[in-house]
Image (cartoon, rainbow, N blue to C red; front, top):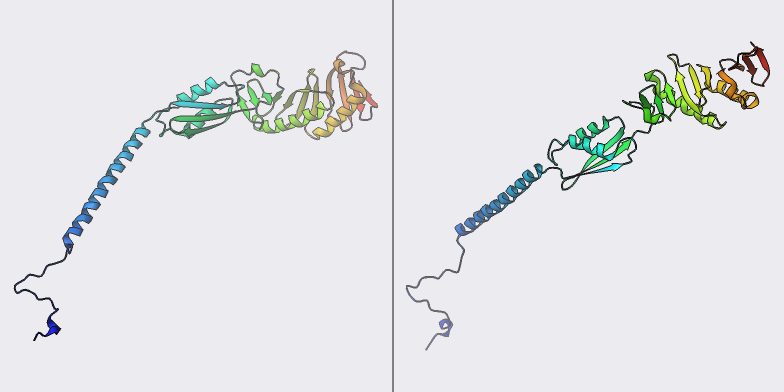
Length: 277
């Protein structure tokens, strides 16, 4: 009789070797990891080399184009272009833009310059000129801030008023001119010049070359008294007057061109003649 409890068990043949499943060898995984690292390092090295080569190429690339923008009245675009090309002493990437800016702003008529790169190989330059408000002495001009700009030739600005005074007081002279010219223009009078001496005593010149001596103090009050007398007594007679002096507390002295018994006349603010000499 067969004992069925053991009939279904597999019978192992004697002397048989146990077969191993496909178990990976530990050494193979380490080799693959090192190979991946080596390959990654090679790719990275190639990329870095490419970037370095590209950087070297760009660092040596010259400026190919310069764009210049602005309003050009006293300096032209070609002059600015020449100044920029003078300062191109390096490649596009290595250029010192601040140095170019300073080089431009050293020129007489350039108030402000902005220089920037435009990739891949161009420069953009923006120019702002000084705004001349008045001439300063023989060879200077005052800009909108009262700063003195020295010129080799100011003949093209002959139509501007002439202001003179101590160099350190140029801004004060400019401010005084602007205030006085705005006031007198309301009465149809134009200022041709304004002079300040070392003590800031003022003499104003109208566009008919008539000087008005104002002095140091109470400038606006004195000019106001002149305008009252001008409206009442002098408006039709300015061509006969050689000189006006407003350095009085309550009147105006008039010097006439014709030498007569009344070549000097003083008027009070109300128009009453105070003194004749």
